[in-house]
Image (cartoon, rainbow, N blue to C red):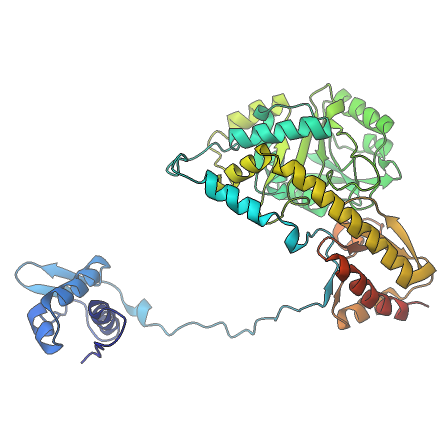
Amino acid sequence: MYLIDEKSTIPLHIQLYEAFKDDIIKNYTVGEKLPSIRKIASLYNLSKNSVQSSYNQLYAEGYIESRPKRGYFVSDIYFDGFKSPKVTDETPKAKKKSYHYDFFPAQLSKDSFPLKTWKRIYNKVIDASLDFGAYHDGQGEEGLREQIASYLIDSRGVKCSSKEIVICSSFGESMGLLAKLIKDKYITLGMESPGYHVARRAFEEYGYEIAHIPVDENGIMIEALKSSDAKVVYITPSHQYPTGVAMPIANRLSLLAYIQSVQGLIIEDDYDSELSYKNRPIPSLQGLDNGDCVVYMGTFSKALSPAIRVSYMLLPKHLLARYHDSFDAYFPSVSLMTQKTLEAFMAQGHWDKHVRKIRTLNKKKHAIMIEALKRYLGDTFEIVAQGGGLAVLINPSVAFDWEKFRQRAEEEGIKLYFAKERCGGKFEAIRMGFGGFSEAGIEEAVEAFSLVWKEALL
């Protein structure tokens, strides 16, 4: 007998269906006949329609089959798999540690995102005019690419049109797509050392050899690049990651001349050009290129939100042709809704307004972070890099117990980030991210940080 509860909020035919399904799996044999609809209706005081609905669902899911004029029978299905005991993972899950203060160097505060404006635009653009039944342009929505092109021309001095822009879901996807695109021509990637580990990994996954090119106060060392086998080089010329140095115009022109002479390629990552606090953003290297040898990379992660997952790359014309030949069936990796919302957000002037706001906000946080460090650390530290991005890089200026510092910070719930751990090379610095804190929170976090710092002084 099955338990059918007339007072339950679950419909009677669903209760009967669930009871039969469980009984079939556990007790019935293949080919065994089920009771007639009339018998079940009488036994449980149910309508024939309710019983019929239950049998129809069992039939639709393949548990039973109907034989004309004979009734319903258990289908010839191998049920042993259903009878297997529930598998549980007996390995205890490691509990994610909660930190009191997290100095993540690439984070925006939650309240910095223009949520009300974004929601209003989203609700307006997502309507019946959009074709949700089609596969849209894998290169990205034309309207969004036009807005990005217009912005890059005005703000970064980039030479481009919407036709040369490819929308991607992340910097990593952009780099992976590019690595695949040029694989038949190049085998070695020149990387800044220290440099951005995500760029290196993207090319390593496609079998490239990596040539680590040192960085000095003028950015990547061009003579060292010339001595390597690399004809493709990845650089962050406007705000080198992680040292913060900017490549002067003479070096940019020298690098362009060399790469053009070897028919090479420069990958310019302009990852946080909007977040410059001391000077006007430096114009792009791509804008100086007359040889069609620069791939320009950008993202909305640093100034708008890393959560919306939108990046872009600007391909030289010779690579654009190859892109269309090789990726004609490439589907968009950024949702149509996100693209159309971002397009309208930019077209209506909200992006420019937001950039000004976020630059002002983080310029203030940047100043608060430096003042707090000076107040609490005194003359025991030095600033290694500042003036842009979402972090200030520091190091001790006196004898220091690094191991004790790391250990005590972990014990006190302070999450730290070190340049060498992510960027390789010999360069080391503590990356004091301020973007994720409120203005008041920076002072409190640095004060707690300073207590651990002082314990590590020798």
